[in-house]
Amino acid sequence: NRTRPYEIEKGSVDALAAKWVEKLKPAVQRAERKEFVKNIRMIVDEFDNIPINDIQKPKVGVVGEILVKFHPDANNQLVSVIEKEGGEAVVPDFMDFILYCSLDDVHRHKILAGSFKERLSSQLLITYIEWYRNVMRSALKKSKRFSSFFTAKHLSSLVEGFVSLGNQTGEGWLLTAEMVELIENGAPNVVLVQPFACLPNHITGKGVMKELKRRYEYANIVAVDYDPGASEVNQLNRIKLMMSVAFQNMKKQKG
Image 1 (tube, helix red, strand yellow):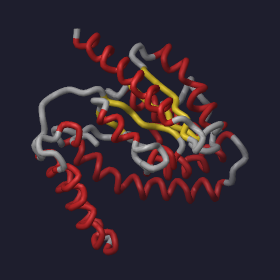
Image 2 (cartoon, one colour):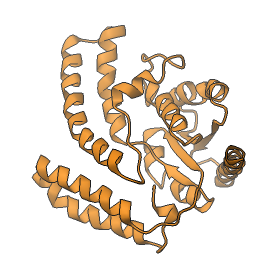
Image 3 (cartoon, rainbow, N blue to C red):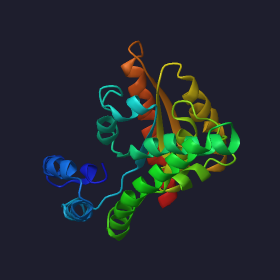
Image 4 (tube, helix red, strand yellow):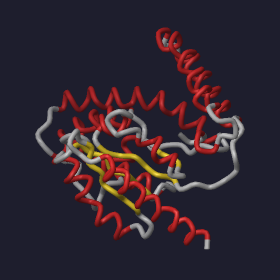
């Protein structure tokens, strides 16, 4: 997503991604950490050096309900739509959702009525996963094109003043945290995707939009419902309007 909108040779980025997917299949089965470290560094290096155009495009974050956010068929090829409209799609890490679910056990014990045993086992799982993610953070920090990402614990701290960590249904507090992360890291344009009438998303997504826009001058957020009965034309028009504002804001910031 970071390089495809700028590729010089059309299809080169997808081809490189496909190459690595095939290469990683046997590596995942072996699950050797040394090989994992080597592969991560090579992946970052190869995407760092693929030829791209030196131009600027507005970054557009994609957040929302887990299926609609990640599945192209569920969101009507949203990433492709953003790229066609002249933007760069930024989709937060799927593993953040797994860690969010684990952190909920920690917060349940702290502020609700969760068990200490579940808290301890979840903390051990988080530590183990973050140990691997630290390899990725290190490689990304050394790259020339990519930015690194926060730990799950830091993400949870971003929602202070917006929502409580007791919001644990669906995407819960993670939805708000991802929007704050995107806005603070160069992607002030955000598409909030959700199934029609998804109550958790209305609370921790739509419910915090006004406050996000108040705190961040260039926050440009649009909520889009994806449902079998929803109008695809209406979805597209809302995204086009958001992209229009994104280009206007980018010009203002340059000026």
